[in-house]
Image (cartoon, rainbow, N blue to C red; front, side, top):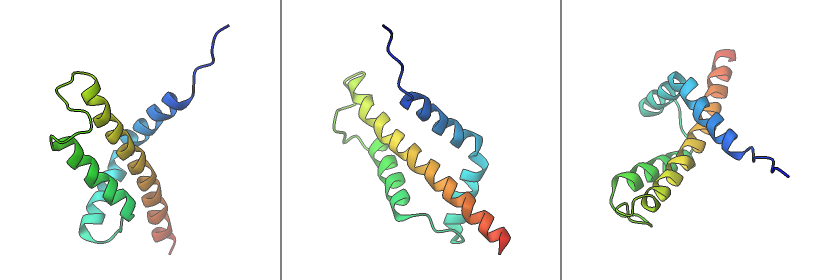
Length: 102
């Protein structure tokens, strides 16, 4: 009896591919947020800042000098940031569509 694989890893790859495909939208969103023309959600801003700080600073839940286990927590934090950025770029696309309408 073979198990049916979970769709979760496939969705993760899709989210990463979505951001890669829409990298121009992502950079446009970041530029407009920095210029004050678009306001990112506070949750996205918090997640991005926390993720960057967590990966850069040496204070981790699991130390990085433990070869594989030390990188798992960094990967999980980056995954959460990726998921949040996908949602935010979708929100930005709706914002731009409404801006063109109005």
